[in-house]
Length: 277
Length: 277
Image (tube, rainbow over all chains, first blue to last red; front, side, top):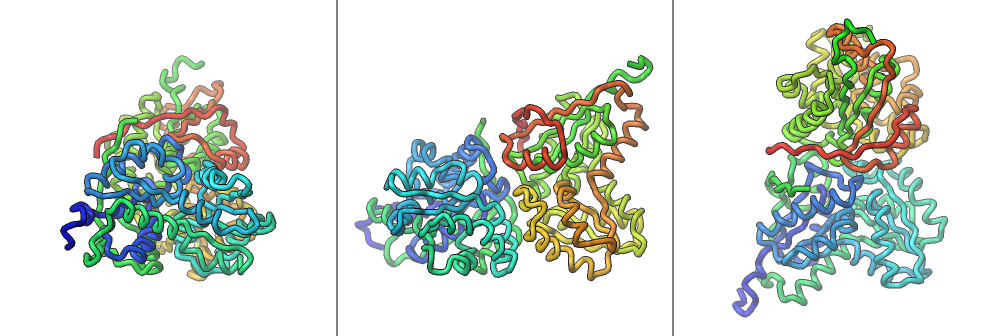
């Protein structure tokens, strides 16, 4: 170990999501930063956040960041679009470590990708309703047109493991056809589950629309942030992954483990300290 | 008002569900018992219960029954299959008023309906995994064969309002075809959302399989119970409906209000007191 590096660089990256979907961000982090250790918390007892109010999602996010700080995490990654949309300002204002969401990196990548200035965004009802991607995109370039669409069937289709199915292809068409007809040339996958539907979405879109994967772009942002703060793990260290859930895992963990080829090991069952409302 | 009736007969019937789906039980109660007042609590801040552990669902159910007792409810109706499957014994043991779930009435109706002794049950993953319908059915007739199937796509399809859609018809076929091929002649709708898919399910099944609606049979059981305990509302009284949610309503409330033709009025936003784990 290089003694000149700060001592805390071997501390884990803390990643959280309302459920299992955020493991797509873990997959992207593992590929980009193989030396880093990751502590993942999936709040499966309270999943999904997608239909919940801003105040509730904010409270849940603060409760979970408390647990990640107890785990000595050096930075917090909000691998959940709903929590990124609704709770990031509060988390940033209260956390002693840096916080990265999935929306800003996805928005920046989309603005860099579009050629015709028309970007589509898909996500849960809460993410789309929040308008967070639209705000983030238009803060970067206010001439860009943004068309949002909530796709509440995608998560249960993915959790059912129907990644290659005619039903899924039809649902994809039902949700995305209006966006294509609107003239988008770039589509942001604004939910951490959605990279698992990348193939089905790609089959429908063909070459006409470029996909922007929020999970991948979030991992890139974390990598830049650790580099800038000199908080990266020493080059020789072996990255580890610890996965904790607030409710016992169900079948979807197997879907994710298999599709993402993640070595998850034994899953911890953890409780989150409830904050007063 | 008839002075010989017990004074507490005008107290409301307390109904709860993890979300909005339990309004199908309210619809059935309103039809059967138009003089009764109903207080409905949908725990939308923590919906769905379907993927949660037994301990978590039990705790949530106790928290909600506490709120219903504060509302002076004369009986509690668990209009949620998951909570009926996992929390009913605990609720019955601790509640000072009677408690009716949806499973026992649905199981009894199914046993009375089947001719060939082969019953299918559909519901959320948690309801099917619990085996609660199978146990309730076989306790009534241990020669009956039960085939269960979790249908996790049904609830999001219903909440999207896609009640008449080719996608829904295909999902119905995907889930139900194996049950029909197994030889069931009776199918229990083991989730309070599912009566809203009654037409789509009926289109696939035709006359070959009889549907048993748990919501309807639960209402019948409540009616018998109130009659036996002389707790029914006076014949002249006007039934009222109060709906409270733990998180602000979303689009599905409109789907339910329209499909069920319920006069919901202003929705109250309520907090449930959290019990220690």
